[in-house]
Amino acid sequence: MCLAIPGKILEIQELGPLRAGRVQFGGIVRQVSLNFVPEAGLGDYVMVHVGFAISRVDAEEAQRTYKLLEEMGTLAAELPPAEP
Amino acid sequence: MKYLDEYRDHRIARALAAEIVQSTTRPWVLMEICGGQTHTIMRYGLDELLPRGIELVHGPGCPVCVTPLETVDKAIALALRPDVILVSYGDMLRVPGSHSDLFRAKAQGADVRIAYSPTEAVKIARQNPDRKVVFLAIGFETTAPANAMAAWQAKREGLTNFSLLVSHVLVPPAIRALMVSRSNRVQGFIAPGHVCTVMGCKEYESLVRDFRVPIVVGGFEPVDILEAVLMLVRQLEAGEARLENQYVRSVSYQGNVPAQEIMAEVFEIADQKWRGIGPIPQSGLRLRKEYAAYDADLAFDLGEMTVDEPAECISAQVLQGLKKPTDCAAFGMRCTPENPLGAPMVSSEGACAAYYHYRRHAVAK
View 1 (cartoon, each protein chain N blue to C red):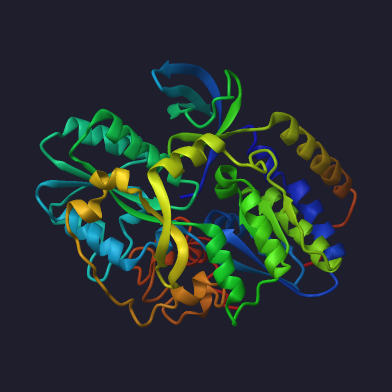
View 2: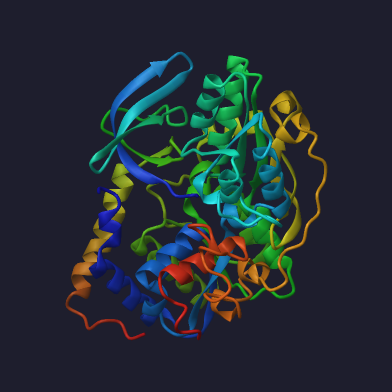
């Protein structure tokens, strides 16, 4: 139930006090509430839980983490697999 | 999909596992709080990548599992009223109450509808002005802002046929309750990434300080979980107890302030009973008095019910990390997802369901 999946904002609608948008998850597009992510704009990725975006994915941070991890992974390809 | 696939990369997972092996000199007991994390661990067999000394025990972070039996019974009683439409998250339908479940109530003719989002429940109320629409509002902090928005929206629109049957739970008081328990074995926690996305890391600082226990906020993909385990192992091996954030791409120190604001406007902290665990002080949410008109407990005068769990079900110990699902004599035999004795066998986040679906029932260790 606490699952949230990342999706990309394709379109934003301001409906009075409410903010919503069309968000793409892989090949699927869904209407999502953007009330909790006023900072998120078009093209941003948001984490979506029960139809509500609960965070804007920090792209820089994700990139940085991933790079670090990937360097480790590439390195590991040279190593024997971990013993359980 | 971006931000998913890269965190499922097996090369990175293997590298992290190798690093964990190298860093571990002693046995450690770690708990992942969230049932979503439990499922990732089982689905990808992450526990089998870890050195033998590292034991992962599964926490109480399954909202469906800890929703009190009484709440399930109340929801069934409401659903069976002809004037009521009961709207619920899909996960709740097969959760056993004391005599029945919502799915069976539906089969008996009750109007039970599944919603993916609480806004759908509000929409159903709008479309059915002659019926009373009750939304079974369960969840942890992750879901509370969305459920709060449903109440806020109903109030704003002046809907008079909408109410919430609330059963909300909070993670930090549960960790505190585990830590003070005399049977506790947990030496480090992976905190739930989406709860912390809403509430921020800040709530966990006092736990780290009070119990000198390392806590790492972790994500939900295999790479996230292995990295969180590595961060915990490094702290434990160094004799440290700090709060760290592995899930930086979604979690900040302050959390999601607009989400916290709507939660605080609609809900207030209250004592809460956890299924299988019992009452934990100040560990839940209830509607504020300004929202009393939207409280199903008051609107329907449901009263107090007290019911007992099936004696054979050991979900209480499973939810506290004291036993594994495979320690249960009924597991996979008299208790299956089709005919569950307890909630952890039903929910997509329940530990028993995770063990069952990913075929861990053959090898009870």
